[in-house]
Length: 64
Picture: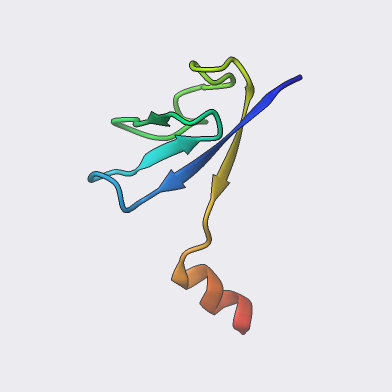
């Protein structure tokens, strides 16, 4: 089955936006993919896979 990777971008808007591998963007006013019970991409119909870039605090914890 086709998948669609959503990458969270905190730099966009106040709460962040997801950029999709099918070349779209999606914004939740509250919560994220799981909190809003999203399973499929509303643009391409693929099963959602969430990808988050590690932030600076995650990198610091890995070094210890």
